[in-house]
Image (cartoon, rainbow, N blue to C red; front, side, top):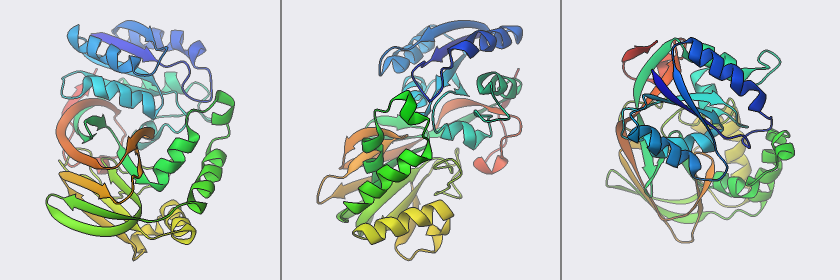
Length: 316
């Protein structure tokens, strides 16, 4: 079995380089022939993923955060190559969604523990979203959370170690200066008008460490979940933030939920956009689901609630 291991050494709050030889040892012990590549610049992981496709490699393992994973899926989308994630970032939302171990007092070597969890595991074919031509694995956001993303990137390794604290500070600053924007949204042709402060278009359920916005999203149902938060000013932004953190946003009358295959967003004033937690320009935004366009390795214990179908095949 041929695999590529892509490592982003600058991703996340901790230096992962000391774990890589042990990761390689475990993969090779499992029968994998692995080519190792280290990224040095933005976008390089996408180029390496394309190379894996061209070389007929069956699986790409990636060590990095959600942004690095996004680069890789933009090289692997609509191909048979499977993605295996070893969490080396700050938020590691995708890894947490699958139940993979991340760095904690219980897991001082999360990369090795993740390899052990993925092998043996299963391979599933899942949907991707595509926002203004860029694929996303988890979500794209417009407004409040994108403002925070722009404020947070780039960060030093020391800043990443502050974790949620920096997000809270950046969120408070963004909320204090936020003004709701008149927005037209088309979901599968249905027109919706709102004064929006936040729109999240989700392919997966988990939004933060333990925060779920799209509580019923399925990774393979051919649909994207759309959460729209209306309002204007600091009070609305604060209510939205607290609602999302506590899960009470589902009871907020200014929150609307939809599902669809195509979503178009046009705003009176440009609003910032992020894709999988990475800054990605401003509105207007055209988004669509790309059904069953990525193969992913998952642990055997990953919750079945993330999917609509049964597992497709085992991963030896």
